[in-house]
Length: 146
Image (tube, rainbow, N blue to C red; front, side, top):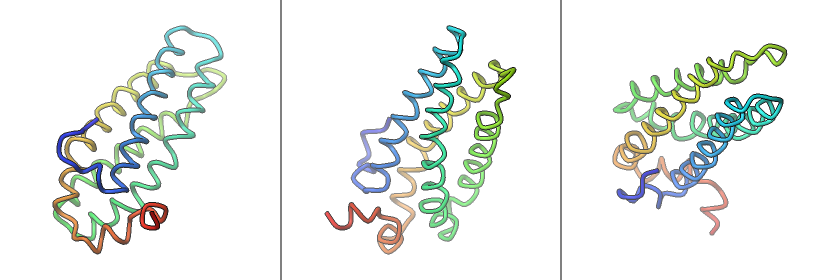
């Protein structure tokens, strides 16, 4: 994860980055469980989805909404939203009776690249692109109170 530009000092970016770390760790556990075989893979899949779904909602309903409104990064946001849909579709649509693990592993590879693109591309660019009033709107309430 990125630690060089200071974007994590923005409370929402810091939160999303911390969630990325947890998601990456859960994805690694899922990858290991899939390779090992057995029922633990479905448990690991559920754990990843439990982290991924609220994270994506936070991105899309907060940061991405502001970036779309600002306009300069709208194309990048549209691409990232399409990647969310793709990754969620694969991971959320796993047939539990006959999982397509190769498709899941491929989605995990795309998830890794997706997180990297957000961490090293979108987040630093968002800090530059968005005005302070936008950050005030999307700053988590607990950070604003602290």
